[in-house]
Image 1: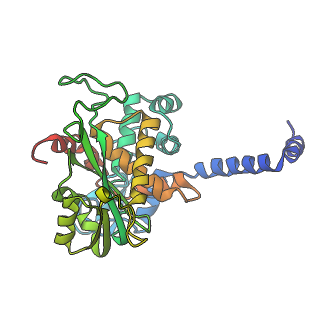
Image 2: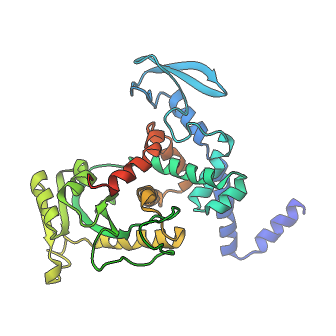
Image 3: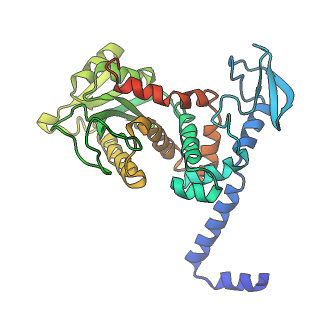
Length: 341
């Protein structure tokens, strides 16, 4: 078809359809610029990175290794490549990384990614969790002003593994006992009115003061005004941290205090997170639950960006401890289910 004919056809479309077409073209053009590898190398070449071994800010180019740019640290004198420590470390098919990032941002299933990239499904799964491990410490600013915090519960899941100590649940099911018990995993959700968000898998059963401290203790400051339910653990945490605390008494049907203090934003987040996990992934294993919570947190932080894929790619290459975090997923899960947690 000639260019003039294409132009005439496009002009004949209704205005809304033309806008939709232009939006699709713009998004496709933006996706062509997704370069995880290029972004990482550009960042290091512009002296915006640091040594992954010691954190020193001064380093120099040090030749190439298997096509990867090498650098040498002026502090510890160790060499490293542009991939060292990042989630891309050890990946063989690096030419498929950018396309994978696009498909992941579109939340395509592992089967569709496998077919699109012609890679093993286990490889597609591993790449997903390497990326999610790199996002665990992204956007961890302090909570300021009114900060809502409350826990929600997920059923303990061994999805993907053979279950020996109980009857298998098929995409859902219910706990063996009424109330909160060992069948439940507690997730602490915290957010301030500036939309700084934290989702942390805390423990099994009911949360304790130490679980709250582990989840958000480092992010609470003198500028934090904590708003929660009347759970005694939150009271103790607020006293220890010397925080202004406004508990809400659910037994008195207290939903809002002084027209300011409430936890409705957090409760709405509970519903959205659970709906996303249940509908998009048909539930996830407890072992990987924190990973998917990291994903949801990043989704929320970049949802207003024009180019979400590029933003996700940039955030994923910053952490030079990502590969180690990925390797510790199983270890962290064992800690969660142990009596020592």
